Image 1: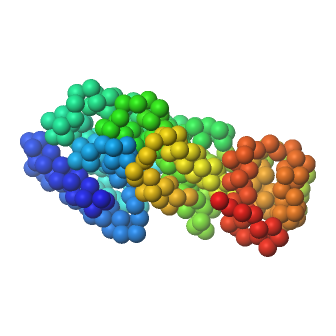
Image 2: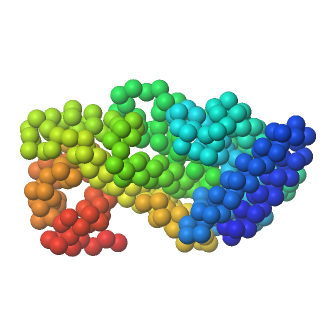
Length: 305
Length: 62
């Protein structure tokens, strides 16, 4: 399933790029980035189920036809890529990527192009995927609404100072949870219009998205890089909450060092990961019908804990 | 006390770990910590995964 959807997405993207009539240099640039990204996905897919399969898993799981998911999957993939690039620019981390030599300007322009390419694909869902107008309209509306909220979450992440933990969790839900919920909804909506089932799939996706965000945070904490830990909002929010509790004044035997906060945050995130995993599992139970792809959806959730 | 602060204690205070292993529910009550059943399960799972107190209390993880 995974290899097939990657190939179908690649075909849709290259066809769409070639049909846009844009200037050759930029067209080739977009194509090369898409090829590079799909290859990167294929490389990673050897031992992991990838999030790009989410629309298909939810569509097929709820009884829909897999051949209709190509457009929504391609559109979501492009937005994921654009979000990755913009995130690196906004966080001043472009140097850590393979796009470092391009510079901020061309990468920002690339991301903008990917967003509008995604829009081109969404505008043709009826034509290219045989999706009825009402369903396609719902999906397009959800893309716009979700991505605007993702931008809202990123705004909090970029601008907030001295966040509370609750605010950090809200930003995680918005910038990551809603993005993965969108992938689930886009596939599920192709199979059903039942609000209960759609809400369940949104809940699953939201929990998966936050789990993946936590996995990133945990990966950073696993590195011996205190400056990296201190640069994250969740570390600072966690530090502030522990300090404001008065615990350290009462218990002076605790090692009052950054490493003790790292260890505490690791335990805290581990607990939260389990909670999110269970909530994601519960969301699937709420479907109250056979979910044909449940084993793969469980696998996606479990490999993120 | 919040889950965040409890996590800090769990990570840095071995005596608390020992107490949790011996009587999980009572220790939480003493600390004034109210967790939902899901959070409680998650905390048990985390502690078990860490294997810090597994030898004392082999909790069953479903």
